[in-house]
Each structure stands twice: as structure tokens, then as C-alpha cells.
Image (tube, rainbow, N blue to C red; front, side, top):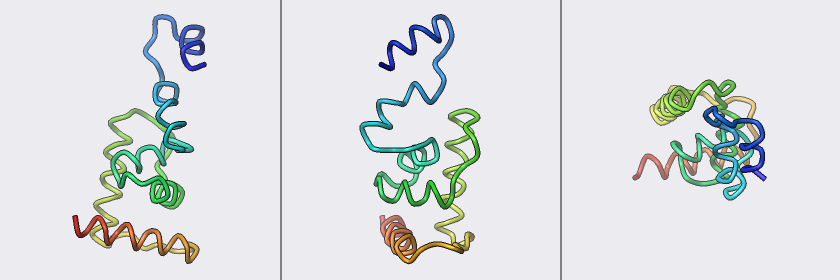
Length: 106
């Protein structure tokens, strides 16, 4: 299906990010670009990526490099305890704390 959409809509143009990574999103169960970037550059765990993608989401996709840098910046701030999480569920808090411990001990 992706190749059909590519052929119809983008004959001589580069593919937009969303279509280009659609197979990877489907394969790994990722719902949007924030989740994808947390999965790729945060922690390669789907549950953690979904949680961080909803709590620390990035703005609408601009380009791949900008999004990657934003996630790496948010990750650095999070691991340096510069981000305060408010209005999160106990389950989200447990996921974030577990991911934090894993990343700090790598």
C-alpha cells in the first residue's frame, strides 16, 4: 500500500517522513512521530516510547534532524532532572522512573 501511495502522490519528489517510515511504525506499533523519535533516540522500548511520546511530545514534524535534536535535548534534560512531571498517572510515573533507572545505569 505504501508503494502505491508513493507512486501516485510523489512521482519525482522525495518522500515525506510519515510515508517513508510507515512500515517501521506499523512493525513496532508506534502511533506518531513523537513516539517514533522516542523509540529511536530515547529508549528502544515501545511502552516507554508511547509514554514519553505523550508526556514529552515534540511539536509537529518539521524535518528529521530537528526532531532528532529535540528528542535528544528532552532526553538530556530529563536525565539531568530538569523536567518536572506533573499530571501523570501512577502507571506513567512507574514507567518513567523505570526507564530513568535503566538509562542512568547504562
